[in-house]
Image (tube, rainbow, N blue to C red; front, side, top):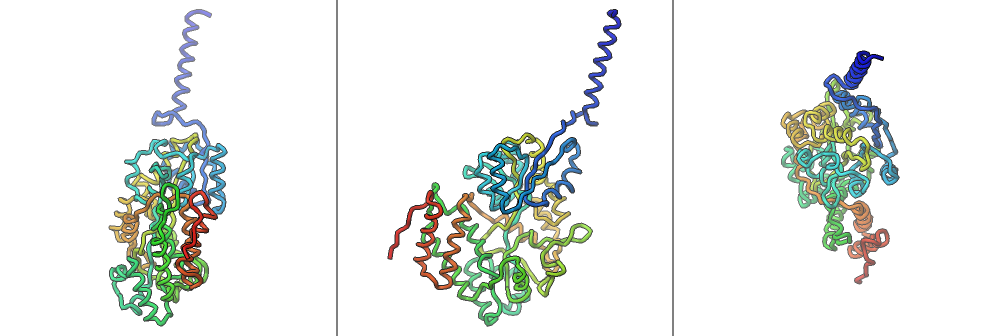
Length: 447
């Protein structure tokens, strides 16, 4: 072969290489992503719907050649299944966690800090503080980022407030519900004026949410049970006061008798944005539980909102990534969109009336005063923002929910007069020692 021919062949090969490189690039000149599988784990289909409806169509370049493997596990076994997979070395690029799972996932060494994904504290500064606290470990390292905020509020019956309490203005009723002293006084007055006909709450378990979150991160000091007898006595007496004023009905939350109690006989109940969503049919389905045909009753449209005596969390979804994820860039992009990007989060909020975890977006929505049929056209976003902004929590531990449950057991017995206060406190400490010997010592009887 002549030298001229050789040079021509080399030129053709070089041109072929350039053409191949050009074809491997997108229209914007960026190199195409190689085919990859993104593994996402959850216990429901909600996040998948959000991904397919909002994220993927708006991030087509990023998601090109990306196949999503959805891993769905029943909620009852979700956390154990997830943590077993992570401990076994599985690479799960993105997974969801609830507020109850947050302490366990934050403490798991196999869960990546958000900083490892390149997500900075400045990017997360738009979020409500309580969601950042719940997504962090005890050293303050944030691992989970919530895309919705679910601060707890109270919903009360406006018609009962007027009939039995003589209150017609929402602001006045809020004052009667937003502190423990005023809440207890309202329960006593309601019982007296209604001759015991109207109960303050559907059950005591709902009110116990206040204890769960008021004590969040305060049960232990340096890994040991440190809650004082005085603090325990405060909650025992608070609940006994309400119980004595016939403040609790016996309806289990979200059961059929609960709906019935809210229609007739119960003054207020604990709720959150997810329980009160509604919107125009062409924008979003009306999802409030009170508007379903078989649920809608005499109470629909008669509720008003109020802060609870103690701030609490009632749900939420946090996004995490495994430490050994092979698709950290995609995971980071998804987390940024759902939990940091104001424009994207506003889109989700308006399309589904979700209360997203972006204080700026939510205050903008509150200013619009969007009517909610559940509240006879009144807006609730301003109440949600106040509840979310004022919610102060310490980082919870993996023991908090268990300890709260053990105290609740004794509280019920104390309210019914089955045990005295000192017995309730002793029994609580004894049961903590039996269940969690690593954090408590065997108590001694003092009588």
